[in-house]
Image (cartoon, rainbow, N blue to C red; front, side):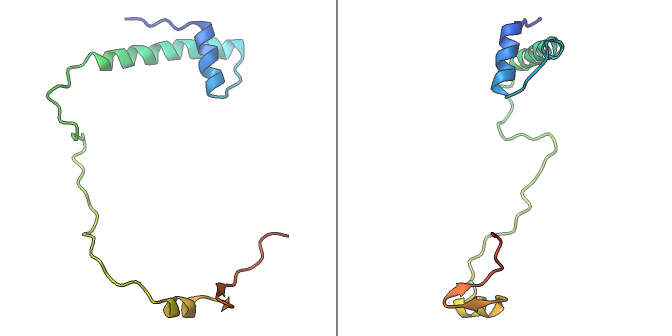
Length: 97
């Protein structure tokens, strides 16, 4: 199966991707886009009806810890750990001239 993509379609895709391509690059990418479309068509033709949606080829597992509620630090403790605090605000170096 060979997908055909026109030069006009290739230029439209390039414009959507904000790419300024030369005529030679358009010709190159036109062929590459056709091969990509052929590959997608091949993937679409596969029967995956018996494949669970959560299947992963690497068999990954969730490695996150259990979520256990705990108290957060008090406002006073946070103020004490700040390098500079005054008038109810954290003081930071000026970054805009």
